[in-house]
Image (tube, rainbow, N blue to C red; front, top):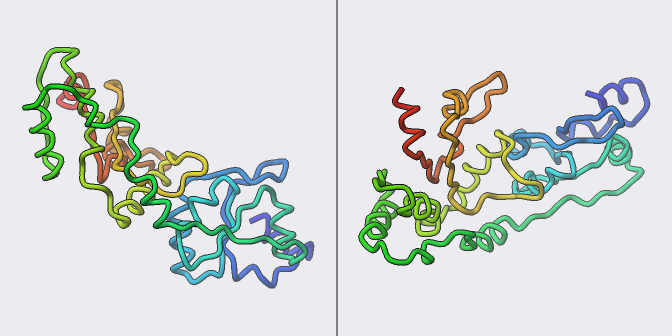
Length: 233
């Protein structure tokens, strides 16, 4: 909107505006702040055959996973104007999507291989992971239920690139992607607090934010006994 006003007022060259889609939250000091849902926007920009997409600098890697689209990350409004006027040259961000995806696919903080003993439970979890089945774990506190559940993503079939893009879009819309993250390459593990509201679990609010059920898509939604009691009520 700010760029459109400047172009309409003759403060900048507006001849290239039709080639680029621009998104970002403009601060009072002219800085461009990061925002949610940049990946789905980039996919839409390519579908609409825009030449390029201008995004906040913090969101550039997220948007650059979309191929056949030039993505530029800008720090402030002055940079955008300089780029559109052609007075300053900027290079589009290039991300090797497949390389980044496969490099991080098998690097787990919590590995199922670390679990000692519990052979029958591990066998049951392996079967459930391979077949995508639900599991109920019953046992006293401290018996290792949560410990093993948190390690399930390390033995599940790896995400395909299509599943990764699908999952990343959901987390992008929810604003759950970290700075500099391009793709989610491992299956998500979501363990919401027992005090979570129904809206936070299923999604909604005025901003149509995905809930925990959606954030666990292609991964695991782990509910302990307190959460199950809450949901049953």
